[in-house]
Picture 1 (cartoon, helix red, strand yellow):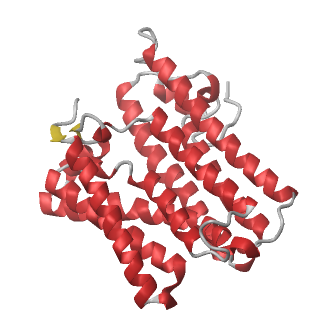
Picture 2 (cartoon, helix red, strand yellow; picture 1 turned 90 degrees about the horizontal axis):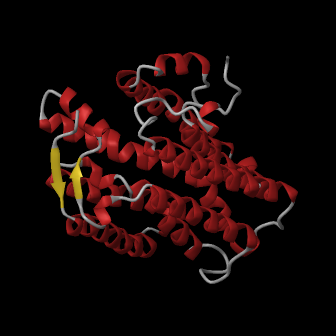
Length: 306
């Protein structure tokens, strides 16, 4: 069943992000001037939360949580430059490791926006994502839904991605004091590239499957989808694992082992929240999906059980 129409103009979507990031920029100046003891990592968290709350206000006003959809992919790009501005050597000194990390973040984001374009930038939103619509229908009231939307559909993904970004922040904040790159760095960077390639390949294979009139109502079992029910999720988790590995190679994770928490939470989130939700929807919509679940790995790329 199609979700109910909840139209949001492109102008409103653009305004949401302009206001959110301008507000964060003004707050950044205030934090740096008045609360330097916070440090860039904590300031970055507060700025991220502020921008998320601004976007939520626009979601609430438009009655469409999908206004938030691109946020988790945009915020890391701006945070990386915010941290760079506070690194030893300044904004215009780019050490090889931090440069590679920032380039990888942009490659990850560009792949996502190219392969999953957001209508909010161009024609506006016609519907709310089916997951949000489903959750809204389960709530006893609109007020409770919007409180849930703020805590679980806006702030939770922001905090999850921010936690995964902390090793990146520490790497960038090394600036010109960073240790030289070694073999472990190149292996970690290669892992990030492999992860982006897996996500891109999974998206292309699924799109080709859905485009086939004979296959679009059946489960995708070609390419990476033969080895995993959710190879795109696997690629996403692998990307953050690669960035954590860069932090390990740079020595920041050894100094702060808690930096591992974000990546571990990301794996748990996709395995125990996102994947089961998608599995349940596929079971309702595709007759062959139960058999696929019995023989195909949930997340990891693993040979199928015949």
